[in-house]
Amino acid sequence: MHNQVLILDFGSQYTQLIARRVRELNIYSEIKPYNKLPEDLSQFQAVILSGSPYSVRADDPPHPDLSAIKGKKPLLAICYGAQYLAHFHGGNVAPSVTREYGRANLSKVEENEKFLKNVHLGSQVWMSHSDTVKQLPERGVLLASTNDVENAAFRIEGENTYGIQFHPEVYHTKDGKQLLQNFLVDIAGLKQDWTPDAFIETTVAELKGKIGDEKVILGLSGGVDSSVAAMLLHKAIGSQLHCIFVNNGLLRKNEFDSVLEQYKGMGLNVKGVDASARFLDALKGESDPEGKRKIIGRVFIEVFDDESHQVENATWLAQGTIYPDRIESVSASGGPSAVIKSHHNVGGLPDYMKLKVVEPLHLLFKDEVRRVGKNMGMDPSILGRHPFPGPGLGIRILGDITPEKVSILQDVDAIFIEGLKKNGLYDKVWQAGAMLLPVNSVGVMGDERTYEKCVALRAVESTDGMTADWVNLPYGFLQKVSNDIINKVKGVNRVVYDISSKPPATIEWE
Image (cartoon, rainbow, N blue to C red; front, side, top):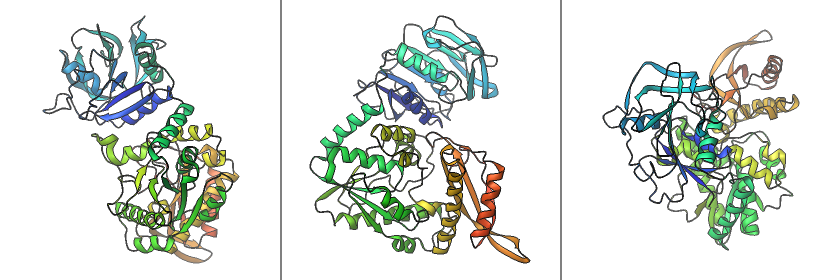
């Protein structure tokens, strides 16, 4: 195994970004909950403590036993982690006079320190805490300050232990990547050898060993994740892989046929299954977002159970689950972060289904998946496809789902996506789509009063889906798309554009 970094999750909203920033340095990292330390720490060459919504001054703060880590392995403590080092090792943490949140600049930077190499006076950092380190821990050495935070960065003499009260993982901290590289490469001595080619080689070997001569069923969606998962499995087991593309009735317009056509020539064994009536019937009358997700997940499993009986001796079900799916669903490997939503292919299989699960991409972020696909020589049109949720339009139709609503949203979505492509905007957007809102509004078409549906358009820019900003699409483009939708889609008389970022909003509306 390559060099590994252990990230202990104390519940910070930024924990997943730490992992991603480390991987950008071509160093492999894993997130584990603070209260479930791995029994075998020998595989980890460095440890990072995340921030947390908790306070070390609380009656029962997160307090893991770090005796096997501190002073024995290179350790970087971020925000809560830094306060933890101070509070429990001879220092003092107190409430800030004013809450320290947002941009700040380094007003003091100690020279000739490996940790601060190429980090200069005035460098912008991002603060997010209500406590502050008033007194450094035993043998603490001050490294950096801001105007409001004296002990912004420190190290412990005689150890490769460092604490910072700002967040190097967020892009607002301009030299954050440099700091992480200084710690992991210059101080911890890790090699930057976790590359797409290395991942492909390791994963293919693992898949061969795990699956042997058994058969695998994979659900293709036409998206990046399932396509890359299919190619990895194809490289590992060839004809033992049986791909199935299910029409759940909630796909984009004409997508069932176009996706099947897309996979021709890739060497994959693909079967199309039209189960749209089955899904829509099961969803009839359900308006709760989680209820819809669970129904779609259940029927999805049922369809695969039916199809698995058509593949003699199939023993595995492959899924394109990626790391953010698991993080938002099971809370950072079971840690203390808040659960945001359930995901239709996370959480295992029912007892009656006798297939084992294999998830080749479960440790990758979306941008890493694309890099792996590129290194396998996959078609750029597949790798550049916008993410599309597993439940499809089912979570873009707010409220209950009917065939009529699906048809309306398919037409709206098609106009929006095709417009982005025609105007050279598609590849500048990470994800785009339309939402059908559960409200009617008054309008006028010709000389007649209308009372019809409202749709919301959504376009965001992101790298991994963990955070996202809305895209400032040209007014002229939005005007043209809005006119086309209202004029061409019967039942819609109002179009709005969503300008919410994630967080606090999510990319999807449900």
